[in-house]
Image (tube, rainbow, N blue to C red):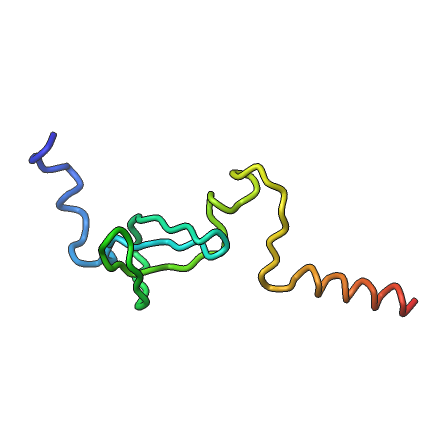
Amino acid sequence: MHGTKHKFDNIMKKEIHPEYKEVVFWDLSSDFKFLTRSTSIPEETTEFEGKTYPVIKIEVSSQSHPFYTGKKMILDTTGRVDKFKQRMSKRKGGK
């Protein structure tokens, strides 16, 4: 099948699809980086295995998520748990 035309080749519009380039995803909670491809191309770059790539910073990946690691941990980078506790304490005190 390599080198042959597919029946949908003539139907697909040319030059309307986003670029699909190599990027590094960087899990900030575990300092783990991995190379993959994405249509999202950020301006920030990082060094990975001797080359410079665009980098997308993430908070959770398979290296830090409790489901994959088996570790029970609470990752609260935005303070949502504290805000919830504060709201609940106000409700209990107000009644």
